[in-house]
Length: 201
Image 1 (cartoon, helix red, strand yellow):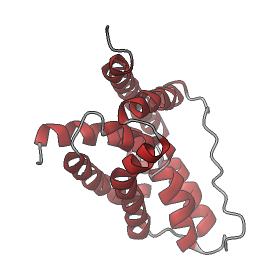
Image 2 (tube, helix red, strand yellow):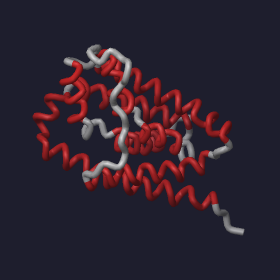
Image 3 (cartoon, helix red, strand yellow):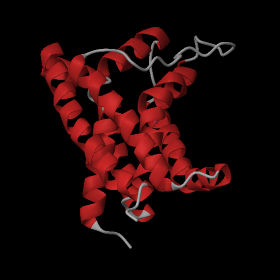
Image 4 (cartoon, helix red, strand yellow):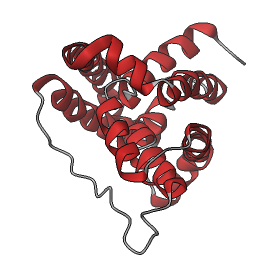
């Protein structure tokens, strides 16, 4: 059953993790390399990746013998380091954004790799979606994912205007602000699930 409060909380968490506004410089770089990008295609592929992990990810965890609470604790640590990246301006995660063997001159490929994955639906986003299963019902997470596709699509279409409006300093300020929010979310997620792994006797 849909719960507006859960959807709102999950939306804010995913919005902070996806950080589509903070990703504008990388989006511009991808577009310069490709010549153009396909916002609808990138958004659709990102949505498919997120929804797939929402509904199949827990099954995969079960197959590996990992419960959602344990994954949530691990996910909180990933979010913690992602937040440190955003706040301190450092680089801890290095992802290969190249695609060997693919026709790099094709802008449709760039709209999928690296734009849809890993820029939008990257490791942090996927980890967060699976971690949210420990706190929120699946339909509410789905609603949050669908709502997040709206700002993603808008930013992809309006990247130049947003960059001009906010400026480089504005983008940095927003990124650091969401980093602080994400850090608090990571701490809460860790504290809320670690007790289930070490129950009192």
